[in-house]
Length: 118
Image (cartoon, rainbow, N blue to C red; front, side, top):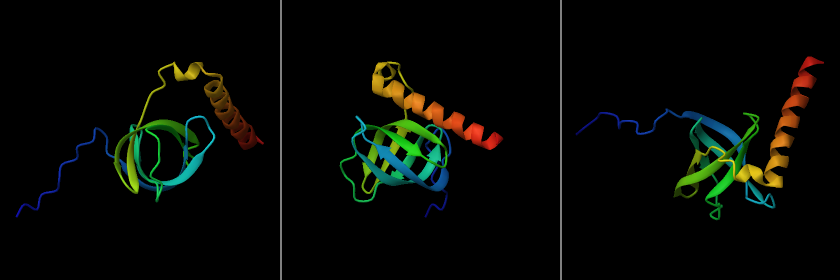
């Protein structure tokens, strides 16, 4: 019987977490809560509960990180999904909605910094 641990196949080791997350569906008309079970700068494992209609691409908002990450679903084993964080290719950033979202994020960060200085 082989007692050796299974080798890690990921490029970066993920940190175990228990963070609240929000999956923001494309178009911004719907969202659902999730739990971020592990995290690295390249991706995460999300517990989505009983929600089975998660789109292949969405934004993941993680309040503890103060950031929103564009995601692509890599695997699905309900109730969990694995996602990779995708870089903005520039085409999505051309839409007015995307520009507004980015400006709102920048605005919140600036307000936080101002509040910290007071």
